[in-house]
Each structure stands twice: as structure tokens, then as C-alpha cells.
Amino acid sequence: MNNLGIIHRRQGALEQAEATYQQALTAGLKAFGLDHMVVLDTLNNLGCLYDGMGQLIKAKHMYKRAMTGREKTVGPEDISSLDMASNFGALYQALGKHRKAQNLYKRAFEGYEKLLGHHHSKAQQAEFGLIGSTYRSLSAQESLDPKSHMWKETGHGMVDTFFLSKLQSHLFVSHELRLTKFFNGLRHLVTKLIQAALGLI
Image 1 (cartoon, rainbow, N blue to C red):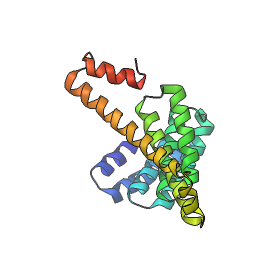
Image 2 (spheres, helix red, strand yellow):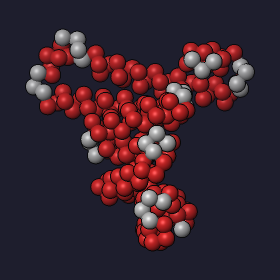
Image 3 (spheres, rainbow, N blue to C red):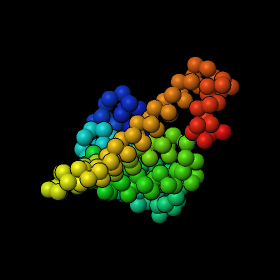
Image 4 (cartoon, rainbow, N blue to C red):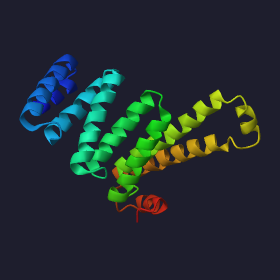
């Protein structure tokens, strides 16, 4: 039933997807209980659906239930738990709760980096989320602080530039590597040079 919900969602039949996920959730809870992976996957799928529909509060409740159950079942450092933390971080970012987003992205990034390595796409995506949430958090604090103009004038505003330049360079180099691999193949000299610059070889 979960797979049928995914198909409905991909086809844009969001109401049908929601109804299918709700049926799957009811059946899963009855058959397996709250902490079974089938139920947790359904909760996550409902969270993704609500997130995509802009129903962020509903999405938050689904993600929270899914993440709590996942951590209890497989532990907080399992890839699936880290995926939940990353999803939840993106949701908090959309809700404007940048500190919470920052904490979740940090946890996801550190876990992915430990399990998959720094250059894995999941680690990089979580790092971009962390950089973005940190930047937005600093911007929000600045707008509330009447002395923020002094902060910028004394040179401490360089933090903004640092985060933006770090994000921009990561995006550029990552994009450049994908293009070079695509057009020139893995053995090409330029690909090797970019990989060496990134510390991949």
C-alpha cells in the first residue's frame, strides 16, 4: 500500500496518496505496532507528502513520530535515522526555526560524514543545509539586534561572507566535478586534478 501511495504522489494525485498512506498506516499499526519499519516508513512518507503540500505542521508531527520510532528501533546513528534528521532539518528551515534546523542538519552531517565520508552526496546535502541554517540564524539574530550595524562595521560581519563563499565554493566544485566526470570520464587529467583538490584521491 505504501508503494501505491508513492505512485499516487509522483503522479500528482495527492489526495489519493494521502488516503492510501492513511490506510497503510492504520493497517500497519494494527498488524505491527508503532515501532515497526513499515509503520515508520509510512509516517515518513506522510511527512514528505504534507511537506510537499505546504502543510508543514502536519508534516512536522509525522516526521517527529517517524524519527522517534526510527531512533528507538535502529538507533540514532543509522542511515535511516540520519535521513529523518535531515528531512526534519529541512522542515524546520521552512518553518523559520533555524536553530532547530541547524541542530538536526549538524547531527545528520556528522553522522553521514562518519558513515559515508565527507564527499558523499548525503553528507554534502546536510552540510549545505547546515551552512544555510547557520547563515539564516545569524541573519535573524542580526535583524533583532539594534547594534548589528556596529557588528558589521567592525568587520565581524565577515561571517556572512565566509558562509556564503563556503557554500558557493562547495556548490561550484561539486558541480564542476560532476560535469567533468560526465564529459571526460574518470581517467581524464582534469577530473583527477579536481578530485585531488577535493581530497578524493
